[in-house]
Picture 1 (cartoon, rainbow, N blue to C red):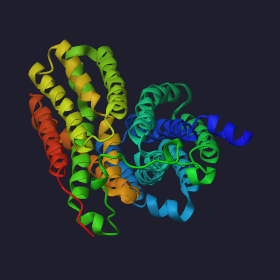
Picture 2: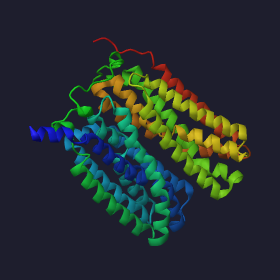
Picture 3: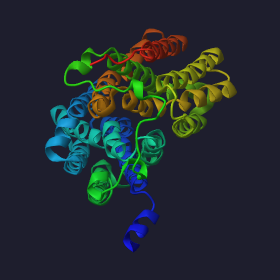
Picture 4: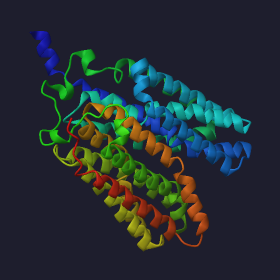
Length: 417
């Protein structure tokens, strides 16, 4: 009796998993998403290679990751989440050192294969796999909190990489951060994120009555095997996420250089950092305030709508008025985090148990798409160097298409079996 009482009095372990997943996300995005632009600059400084060559290596990094993400459910089933996550951290660490030591282009591309395959085991689909078994009703709150580690990873690691490379050199900095990453990930998978409710005799959400929101059971269906690809809801969800992230990452890759003429490098860096802070605020607000029975596609469309308002302000400012630029960047930044965290929540209510397959697939499709976004937006800038309107209007148009994809699936009902 006493042991039962003691167990029930303890905080729900699922929130420890959320905290652990938050840390995993810090390392995953800090090294695998926000790191490549820094690596690109460091490699160019050391080797004198062209921007095109190193940018192509970054694209390979993301494309390899997309292949692994699509196969994460199979890897988890065969090897287990803890083993896959540890192996991924080791590949990521080894690849980081490879970036620094590469003296021939083929060695650089080999290193990007390692980092690309490794970082996605600490990325969006992996975080979803760690957190989702622990929460059903409270999953929006849990996932939004865990995914905020991604934004924090950018805040921490972008300046940390620059400082460490300047102090120790790229190779030593990569070896140090790689070793720390492996040590922390191994500990977290052993003690926290590698556990499931079944392992501990617990129920999702910390109770015995966890279930999907009462107001949305009709939206849940089981779609087996290759039928996912034939399902209109899956295709519209994948398109909405891919288009949204393509526009978002393409614009972000050039945003700093676009606002430097009006703000100067110092203030441009501060404003870019505020976009990340706004992303944390937006993800947290949507995760904690979204009602249990809300149509999550509409909320995703709303988030993109806020970003569109931000882009419109940037267009109106012609990137000349600092106050309007700040407002535009903050509004655009508000939806950055939701572009990653809301699609898995949509998959939860639309695909039920098959969400564990749907989420890695939509993440893989999105990552394969946004791998080409910086280059595509760069071509747009080169085609119209005298005006900022084309790149902003293209981003706006793609965001509108993403909203259209989400809304197109709103009224779709699962087929009767």
